[in-house]
Amino acid sequence: MHSINFTTVLLVVSAASLTVAATLSLLVRRRPAVSTAMFAAFGLAFAALAGVMIVDVAGPDRVTVVTESMHVLSLLAATHRRLLVILPLVASCASLCVLSVYRERIAEKHARDYRNAISFCAGIGLIATIVVLIESVI
Amino acid sequence: MFHWFKSRIHEPIAIASIAGAAASLHAAWIVNLLFFRQARTDTLVSLYLFVACVYAIIFAFTFVWCRGRDCSDLRGRVLHAFYVAALIFLAMTFPLVYGFAI
Image 1 (tube, rainbow over the protein chains, first blue to last red):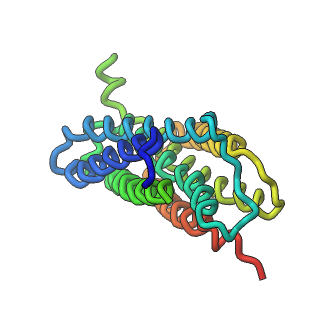
Image 2: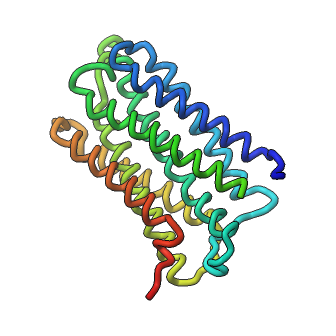
């Protein structure tokens, strides 16, 4: 059985935060006050994903991009996991920037594209984090 | 003065952040493909740093270019660019796709 390590805990925290952010992004149009909570959720997810990246880069088992042994599933999953973690990190960074600019005015009519962007970032970030979490236990 | 500053929306920052995200996702899959094709066993630090640099540079350029302009026609375009970048990133970082060879 796979032991629960620090990276797994960080990934679970980021997945939970992105779930909260995705839920709140559906409510933000009717209740603009939830934008602060959504900002906090994205911030927590960003911090947790940055922690995952730092552990991968500077941890005891330093990782390299696998360009050989393509037949080994665990190596493929390890490389894919370390690439895929970029997506939720970048998406949460973009969402944080948008929310820091708009805050409660994200509910206004002209900000519809930004609301869609935040919903997309939360959704695709959540999916990518779940895939990373699954691949980290293979 | 501070009330005026708070009520103002700095839309170029939002545009620049989404544009930077789209460009950095493209940079990530392209650099990964180059690493794979050149058979380089490189640490991920260089990949992560390159992605961060691309994000910062595109953010800065877009912010400077959009500052003082009407960004209303750019919202939809930047959003669609981000959609496309995320989907291409998901496809091109799949090992069976970037490792495909005839």
